Length: 416
Ligand SMILES: *[C@@H]1O[C@H](CO)[C@@H](O)[C@H](O)[C@H]1NC(C)=O
Ligand SMILES: *[C@@H]1O[C@H](CO)[C@@H](O)[C@H](O)[C@H]1NC(C)=O
Ligand SMILES: *[C@@H]1O[C@H](CO)[C@@H](O)[C@H](O)[C@H]1NC(C)=O
Ligand SMILES: *[C@@H]1O[C@H](CO)[C@@H](O)[C@H](O)[C@H]1NC(C)=O
Image (cartoon, rainbow, N blue to C red; front, top):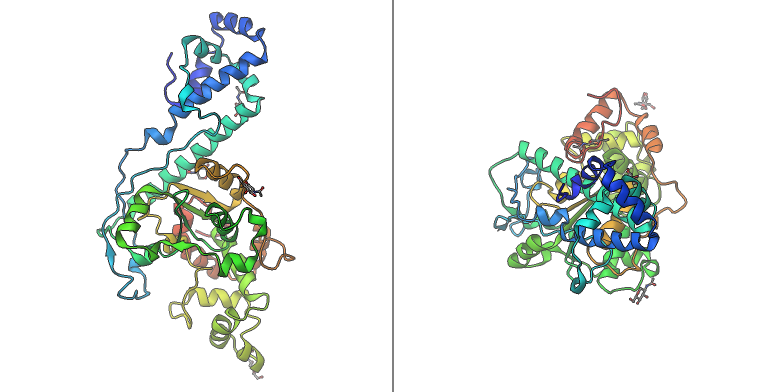
């Protein structure tokens, strides 16, 4: 029995178990001890490296479909520079996952019939499972599988909302950070781990030797990171076609509450005057003079009224803008879709894939208001309990495409 396809490997192995000749072989080999075991695992992993799934799908061409929700159709009127159209981008999948074990190209051994037989024993697999290399392999398979299903779902949802234009504007790549050394494009989604991602990009780029030495202000105001829209037309296309494109996002309502707490519940010299004042002016009856002057003390309900208002007194902001608008996931064929809920594991997995320095791991700094609890689903529920059912439904509708494309489940059971 051949086990060529990596995803079917385990099933294939199970099917083959309990065959007596193999049991015999197993007993024979088991006595040879753990050394042999590890040796064979090494062969297995190297062969797997050669057959990594990304390689298989490398040439599958996927037509990019523009969704009606992408910024082109937004109410914002882009400047003439923004609308300078870039030609159609064929999203060739260049991301070729690598299994991070041995990669000595000169000595890739062949898997022989005997090794295969050896590996067709489930008892032996359990032994492999208990080694750290075996666990790393299981993890690799699991996380790769997650990426495949996320990308497949996104493809399906985007296909449903196709429209005729397939061009990318400069504005649509303006949230994407560029890391040329490791050929990485990271689309910034605020409140979904982006500060720590910026730290990592700065280290990857050689601006610092570790993420710990970067202060918050440095990360946000002097990061020397380039955005994709600052490049020429040809350079943008080249990067979109050949770099690993990454997106990390978060449960939409949790992200929204996190943004509200961050911008309105502690002193803020930008968000209070710029957003707070018009919000209080429009939505608070009998507002006090000082509230009208400072814009301080916006309530969550007022904030939601502003968000859902088709005639907002002040525009949108990236902290509460939808991911479909920020990152154009139907136009840009992201190779990696990570989630804040499993941020560190997935970010570290990605870092190993792109060949980041081994001592670089994803940090867990909490930048602003370090004393406030991280916004959890419990805290999110509490904020939303201050709203009416209709307001909750409309907020869900507002973020509906983010829910659909990234498989987040409906946040409250009484919504439809
Ligand atoms: C190995 O471990 C993974 C999870 O860690 C589990 O899903 C799998 O069934 C195990 N395989 C065997 C043969 O025990
Ligand atoms: C990681 O390794 C590099 C050299 O490869 C070194 O310059 C850097 O200081 C190390 N960082 C940490 C946090 O140990
Ligand atoms: C506003 O204040 C007036 C007088 O103080 C009061 O009659 C009215 O009910 C208040 N309106 C609201 C919505 O609180
Ligand atoms: C969506 O997530 C659920 C778990 O919440 C999972 O069971 C399901 O397979 C996922 N669907 C897709 C298409 O990935």
